[in-house]
Amino acid sequence: MTPSTPNANALRWLEGLPPGYFAVAMASGILSIAFDMIGQNVLAKGLFAATLLAWVVMLGLSAWRLWRFPQAVKIDLLNIRRVFAFFTLVVSTNVVGILLHQHGYAQLALACWAFAFVVWSLLLYLSFSVLTFLTHPHTVNVVHGDWLTSIIATQSLVLLGVMVAPDLGMYTDYMLVEVHLLWLLGLVLYGIFVTLFCYRIFFQRFQPEDTSPLLWVIMGAAAAGVNAGTVLLQTSTTLSFLQALHPFIDGVAMLLWSWATWWIPMLVIFGVWKHGVKRYPLRYEPAMWSMVFPLGMYAVASFRLGLAAEFPPLLWISLLIVWVGFAVWCLVLLGLVLFMFFSHKESSQ
Image 1: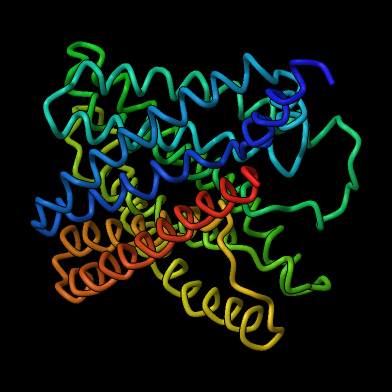
Image 2: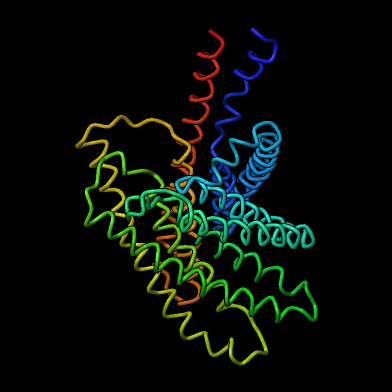
């Protein structure tokens, strides 16, 4: 046995590290934003610290994985079922940027937006090139929940872009035009992907193993569109063609919120069918973090839409969902801790 073999075996977890683990920072960050909105400052600050920690750790692990196992990263990037998971890097970076801006670090927030935009641009064309040119079953069954993470990434650029726009001075209007275009692009991509999802779910054979926590991203992507739309409605600009878009944005935001709301009971039914009817055991999996984030995004979107529409029931819904999201965050975190504990115990035996 060569000396490098034990070390290679010890780092097997790093080689197989899911790129979607940036969703830990996404989930923690959106809940921090939500708790800040409802005045729960202690929880907001605690989750802000957790967000920074998760993001920095994942950046370090991802860089280590790229250096140590470049072939594994290449395989993930060229896999149609895994490449879209890399968009969690974009979303988490924008969420971190939003929190940094809220805490007075405007320049760092702008750097986060620039980094996220570059990564988003590269991933967007890479993922669609993989979908178009590489060999895979060209059927609707390749549609995967992570695909909609690309829409959330697009809308997250809108959310942070609106915040950093005033810091750009004479280029503020350039940024505002950019984020409006990104919001519209996100709508188009969502329309394409959600049509494929609905066709696969409702008109193709649907197995319990197809019911993944990633399905919650369908709701989360719609909620992200609501959140970004309400932020755009609150921006002030001297460009008349952007002002003329406000009635359209208002109507689309209401439509997306109702669509996201419709999905919540449906997704719960999917979970009951899988674990209650089909008796699939409920175990921790990294994709569970992608269930927490949509709940937090829905809470924030409901809060902002309630303020924009001056309709208090939406604020009450937001208050309920943010606590539900936090409870799920705690359970998933417990699952992660137990998973790491037992995995370490098994590897040491």
